[in-house]
Length: 287
Length: 159
Image 1 (tube, chains in turn cyan, orange):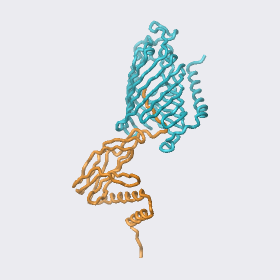
Image 2 (tube, one colour; image 1 turned 90 degrees about the vertical axis):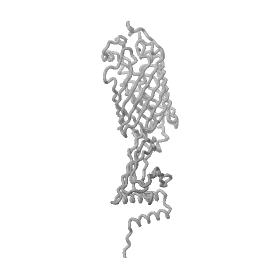
Image 3 (cartoon, helix red, strand yellow; image 1 turned 30 degrees about the vertical axis):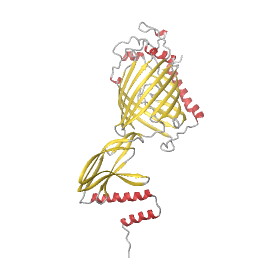
Image 4 (cartoon, chains in turn yellow, orange; image 1 turned 135 degrees about the vertical axis):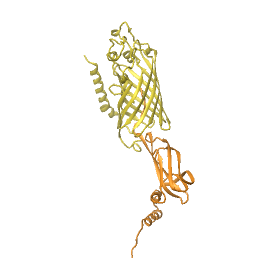
């Protein structure tokens, strides 16, 4: 019998094989047109340390942030680029295998668009036992529920670059079965030394993905938890994110994200919070 | 008989050589600039006139490489000698040294202005004596950035 960790390991190994052996064979070293002028380096990296206060509601019924660490996020971020391979960290990290970052390879790079093969965590997993243990109150809807692994995905990203804006479309298969399609448009509004990003996103979760994360299978049915097989679902997101340079090493970062989920997701007996508001305020140190 | 080539003669000779030998204008501008800097030292070191000239902040920080940096720069100057002065921006355009006047003061020995800095590269300021058109002091505001240029375009998303 395969355990979930063995499956995760196999998935990671498969990804490494695909990226480091198979992909370069047909991608044939994409060239950045700007590498020869300003960006004359084929290798670049940047390490950053982030510390932020976060406020985020949990969608799961009965789960509330209670401890100090629930409001504090300390992270080490690394952006690496080498001949088409990249590791790109998101500002906020999760505990998933890619640590909240995106690992990928640029298959095609053009002036105003590119196509990447990419792996990242598309859906955050959760461990009902841990959540119950850390909660002051009993959470009946989570008692006896099986663990949900993080939804790590492997797929393609198409990015279209406009002046001060990026449209990206991800289509990825998840380790937990099913697939995700994610469209995100981010517009930069520079105001003096501020960078203000307005983002809007739409994510489609296939039936397998939604069933796995918020569905209740027949083995999990209890008095507080009826059988639930939702089918596919959607999430719409609006985001405002601002950055400001404090010094040559420090910058301020702050943002707010509002997420709306479709009825099939919200009607789950596991879900308490139908729409999510997440706020982050912090600083970033560049090494 | 001996021939002694003074520094001043050497500079003039170099300047003329460059001009007549068809040297690049940037090299000429550089020599003029060096002469001006030496003149500044001369005036500043003179016991009769002590000049102080500063711009704060001396460094404007932008988020990303190449991005325009904005700052309200406080430019402060004072001189022992009361006379007419002008504050200039030193610009190098198409290898020519140009000077753009920001503000002039009549019969003054010190003043302060707020300059709206808006640039993606260093700006040098000069304080000039209007009487003899001599640059008597220089200062600059540098531009630096938090994030270096990267070959990959970045997408920021927090949640």
